[in-house]
Length: 386
Image 1 (tube, rainbow, N blue to C red):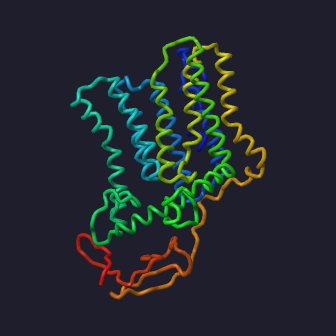
Image 2: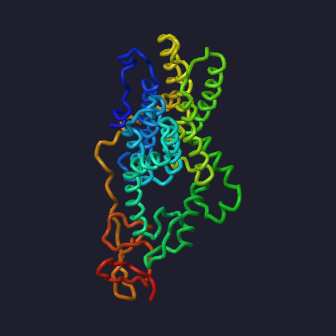
Image 3: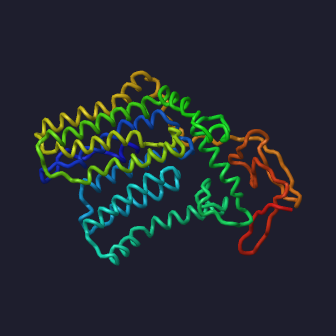
């Protein structure tokens, strides 16, 4: 299913013209194979889903730029992209800057191409954002019901309700995430107040992420240099100027990734998409070359970009038999301890560890004897305090 989602169309269009859209999707097939074979797909954690959503969003982003759909009166592709973007945010909040950049660029291109009045642009924007806004609203409402904060563990938009997590607790949870991304096992006080984390973090990236981070960065730098040279030495032609915007969402996302929580798993597919974004600029320039030269150059770029993945599978042939075929992983069963609050409510807690998994409810690893229950007719709620 991963590969079908980015299947490559025929190399030649019925009208005989060639387009970037005919090539870029094939570059994502090896990374998706790597994800499928080298990740724990049955895990209920959102990392794999986030990777796939990022790649799908990026594919349609390139198609929107290359296909020049912004000049048409059809909003279906942008609507689809906005819905995918909203879904990506609900899956993992770290996608926020990537999808906002993608959507902002496409909406700006759309507005400049159609040259609508302010009123027309506002009405069209409202139409496009209605369903994505509803998705984000429902997701934010869930966050409010669980913690009082729509974007937990961010304090943005937190409201004062009886069941809300305290602002200090929310900030502490965010700091734990940030510090763990920088230097796992260290407390926020040890990590966030200095740059001492950078050395161990950088060493970990160099030694543990050659396939997922180091090689893509090297190829991206080379791709940027080659794209610059192609636009200097190849014969001038009318090229879609918007292709130069393709790498911007990735660069913005990586900037915020490094500044907030540079754990490699939070980057999702960004490092794989970065060299492909540079290749897109090159492909846009060489489309006017003869078919033999053009296809040969694209084949060479394909092999170079994915050489690290091929080498990984050569060095780790036992990866292939590890393909999961039994569905989602089994949820662990744990022993529970029953505690009673001062108001007489029975609360379950794990005997060991800090996860309740699929246990009886209410269950929490952090028992509070002052927990109380208000059986309101309209909105029953848990509260704390004697």
